[in-house]
Length: 340
Image (cartoon, rainbow, N blue to C red; front, side):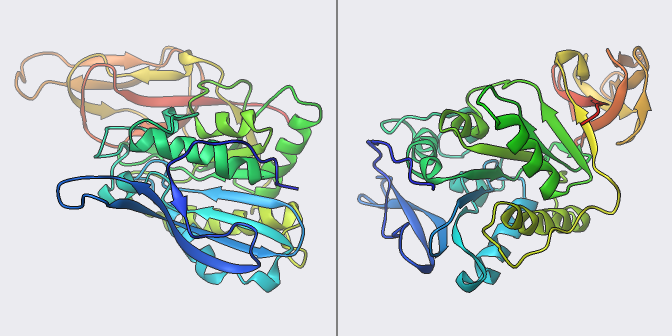
């Protein structure tokens, strides 16, 4: 399993041997020639933990650099996971868009690249495009299951959830939902269709790899409760696919709540530039037409605030963290319950 190799023209190189037994922690080297370092590279950490034959799990965080719970959880996993515990292989990329992770920013300071909109990438492109290409053409073909850990980043807060996408491959949806349930987040989001092929899960789809995503916290912090969800979920997922044969799946405290986000009507945007006053909290149930909040104009305080309203009914699944907004900023989005 996990050896669906493909030809690649990547310029990224590594001394890591993905097929070598044991635990190996090193770097992916992306050539990056600048004034201070003519023959330099961007050294991006990677770990491979392998023991015998078995499935391969590819676990990734730092796709957006200001989303931290996954980065912390995967750093812990690299240190704590013993090869003797597992049967198969775990590939861990804890800071996928490394320049963004080091800057604590959503996008790369080198090229402005949003890695999670950059797949399948380009081996001749900017650093972000080269990283995307390496993930899609080298790492993803080795995987049997993939999980990309996100949070709301600096600008958003989320109800913590794990997610998966439905596909058309025979048995795909059953395997994906089984993995989602095994991870054991409080909420499971099932995306009915791929919204953007530039996402990391798009790379997984193209390689026929069952993929999970999710948002675990946000607001540019490390949330204790969300970190616990991710740490427990990683072990659950590895147990589910057989990589941790001695593991035990620990379910969430309450049965998983399943939701979906159908279309753009679930999103609410700031109507003007100013200071946003929210009227709802995460987890609130709202009705179509209900006021989401209003924008104040501190530079013109006599001007009446401009409200914005929900275009649908549902759960407040996400809300904006920053108070200052510009027209077009997402200030909240909803989800609706489904049976699974």
